[in-house]
Amino acid sequence: MVKEKNLALCIILSIVTCGIYMYYWIVTLTDDTNAIAGEPEDTSGVIALVLTIVTCGIYGLYWAYKRGEKIDKAHQLNGQAASNGGVLYLILYIFGGIIALALIQNEVNKFAQ
Image 1 (cartoon, rainbow, N blue to C red):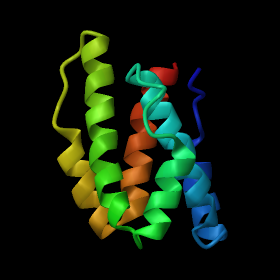
Image 2 (cartoon, rainbow, N blue to C red; image 1 turned 45 degrees about the vertical axis):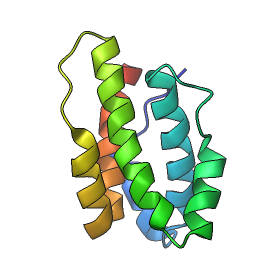
Image 3 (cartoon, one colour; image 1 turned 90 degrees about the horizontal axis):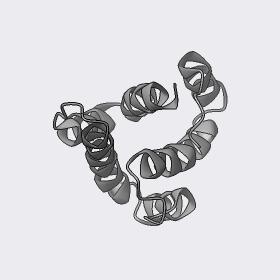
């Protein structure tokens, strides 16, 4: 089950902890987007975090794009129109990772309600 997170609190914690909270946030967002897309057996959040760290952030670009695809799939499963969010999240992740995380969390929160 996906739980709604306070978006402002996630951003503040990410800033106050100098980005450490963002690692936890990436793990939970990965697991949550897998759950709402109906693919809980897909790459886990911990594996995604490890791959992002090992590849010096390169996997994070792929991760951001895939989160958009997962959210699009979740919209389709609910009979809603899907946009190509993967490209948006990828671009935002390149220029400001926290912005991409916030938008992904916003979409996940919609499914948690």
